[in-house]
Amino acid sequence: MTRVLNIAHRGARSLAPENTLAAARMARHAGADMWELDVAVSADGALFVMHDDSLQRTTNAAQRFPDRAPWTFSGFTLAELEQLDYGSWFSESDPFGEAAAGNITPAAMAAFRGEPLLTLRAALHFTRRHAWQVNVEIKRLPAPLENFPVAAAVVAMVDELGMAEQVVVSSFVFENLRAVHALNRTIRLAALTGLVETEPQLPDLPLFGVNPHYVGLTDGAVRGLRARELAVLPWTVNAEDEMQRLIDAGVSGVITDFPQRLQRLLGS
Ligand code: G3P
Ligand code: CA
Image (cartoon, rainbow, N blue to C red; front, side, top):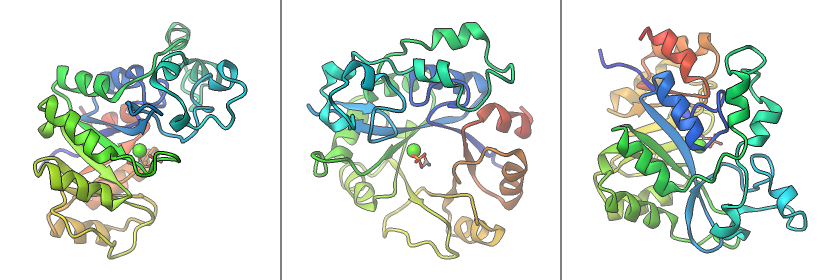
């Protein structure tokens, strides 16, 4: 039986600040087979890694640039983004309680302070250097970058680095998947879906897989998708009983904030 993939959501974001190299290192250390990240674009067109439209939650943008509320990333140049701290918020808030539980040392928490910007190029370099795998999620970009050709820019970088076999591109915006497919037919594509319907609406593309929200994902829905030779990679599954239910249902992988927990469950 093929091993269920352990996929670290935004890196091991329970153990380190999300979407940073620190989180990617933690995910590797935890034994993840792949990490997941979100692509953002600076005002001057640089690709970097960030989940929210606003920089406020996961950086010190509000302190560094107090008059730039709501700190939407698309309004900041790469040079400005490079001035921010992507780790102190995590050290201060311990968002998943893992430091309080004794699973992150005080020294490690302190070391996250000043964590630098992660560019997509650096994220890909890290993935390549470690012969690892990455799920690159392309979201809809905030104004004024709604029409920025982000999928084409991602493909160009993946091609330049010769990494098509190490990358899965996922998106809720199927137009992005179509754009990737038009430019490179070897990059694996995964359609992101919300709460699962028995028959999810999927794009007419040769998909590698589907990344459905795990809530309501029934055994029958998993079987149906697998019967269509689609990988099924539910997100974001953090509770062990739910991980086990989905593994028993036959998913191909699990996207989780706790790759350390999933790894224990997978028994390796
Ligand atoms: O890929 C699954 C998941 O990352 C999608 O949701 O909001 O965490 O990017 P979000
Ligand atoms: Ca994501």
